[in-house]
Image 1 (tube, rainbow, N blue to C red):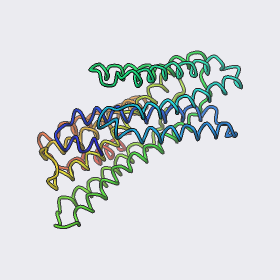
Image 2 (cartoon, rainbow, N blue to C red; image 1 turned 90 degrees about the horizontal axis):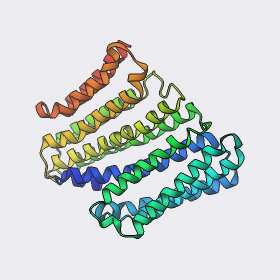
Image 3 (tube, rainbow, N blue to C red; image 1 turned 45 degrees about the horizontal axis):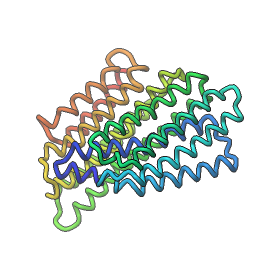
Image 4 (tube, one colour; image 1 turned 90 degrees about the vertical axis):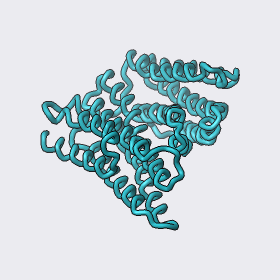
Length: 339
């Protein structure tokens, strides 16, 4: 919501930056637990208790997001994140004790996580969050976090299950797309509260069609993660950050457009349409990077990047949600015909 209001007030860069930082923290913690659970979920009492600790840390993190987004106060967010990650560290140490063949890999995970939590704690307790170079420190920390799996897995790949990972990612996509459906519902509520505005009905219907299109194109017949090779797995796993973030941002874009139509925003209608088409184009481009360019050939391989480019620039000539929906549905149909 804070990102929506920032964009609606004409502070898109600040809103997007805060959205990116908050989303990365949530996504990264989810992703780490998902891949670990795919490899070492024995569902015993200790595993369940540590999972509960991770959930408690996520609640702390969520409680601190408002202060983080509004004032860059990272204290509660870092505390919650460190609780989550240290619980993950203990899980990896348990795996190291029981999986001698991959002991070195699991120790690398545990050590890397512990060291980086010291880094985040130092930033929080020393007041560096208020320095001009705070953003550089955070981005540097993100790079270190992303480097842990790439470093650890080179010792010996963990026994994660490909179909399990694909299923978990698909479930998160459904949750993310629920944000866009929520925006559709909010637009309908606004349309019938007070003076009826048919433009809000158009927003709701377009949001519904675009959401279904995003769902359809993600769950295409072509299989995700067609290889367990480390480089491919890292690209697929990390590349989904942009797909997840863009999918949720489309819903936020519809909320911005709704506020613009109601007169509660201070941006133009064209800018409000960009808030929808740009993340939608990133969503399609992300799917091309992690899937289509690897499994398709010929003209079918170019459909998603071409559609993404058209959507990204279309509001300059035609700021129309209906046109965006048509382009998305056409991309799905053309892609299916060319395969």
